[in-house]
Amino acid sequence: MRVILSAGKKVYFTLLASSFIFPVSAFAQCAETDCNTLGYDSTTSCDNGIKCPFGEYWACPEPEEEKAVLGQCTGYAKNCKIADILNSDGTCTSEKVSGKTPIAVVVYIGGDGCGQALALEKLGGYLWSTEYVDIPDLPNYGSSNLVNDFDSCENTKTVIDYSYKQYGNSASEYYPAFWQVYNYAPSTIPETKGKWCLPAGGVFNSISPNIDAINQSLIRINKEDIIGWFWSSSEDSYYFAWGWGSADAFTSYTKHYGYYLNVRPVIEF
Image 1 (cartoon, one colour):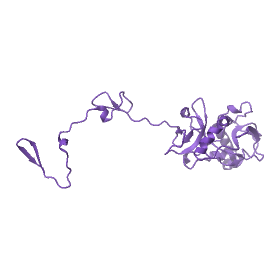
Image 2 (cartoon, one colour; image 1 turned 180 degrees about the vertical axis):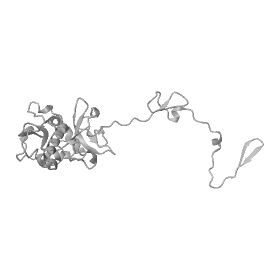
Image 3 (tube, one colour; image 1 turned 45 degrees about the horizontal axis):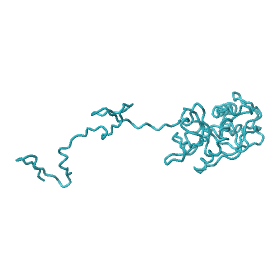
Image 4 (cartoon, helix red, strand yellow; image 1 turned 90 degrees about the vertical axis):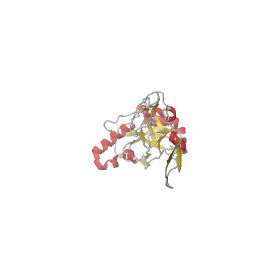
């Protein structure tokens, strides 16, 4: 191959068959100096951004998608609405989204931006307890103030701690509803074991007016809707605890006398 660089002067290059052939324009190419073309598209500076060397433009990193911390109240729920799907990555979506795994449906959002989401399955019917005890540190709620109890996880922890202190490794035999919830975790996110809770009365009260929307979300993702009677973690007295029915609201049941109500956990986010 022969290239003439200037009049009267010739330079010869020998290229192997496997060599690259560059266009003539490559010998005279200029550096690009337009900030926007180079990808510097922000007119303001930003954290961890890079300034364009040819002007007052910045390249800024894409903001990370805001996510909840599962099992912990962080205020993220302000970005969600009741009947949204809570996904395993800590995001809320109104529909099932490709690449995301649903683990619960949002059933309560507090004024502080903290929420609780209901598991996609019920765990079966269990006794609240096999004994009649007024659990220390667990508040008693009557019908007039039951709807003010949103402490699903605090209630659950109180009963779990009390029963384990009393009965050790046999505690699940005495408070089966609570231990079923405590040992629960979806197979898609096993690291949430120990973070699920038995819903408090106020959470079920939040479900009641929204049950149609919640059930529609469950049906859309081919999961079991909310039908039947369920234990709450709210205690009435040493003898009674509160149950909630999808059709008939609240009833105070004896903790032990043959009432195997459904158990369906919630998780804070």
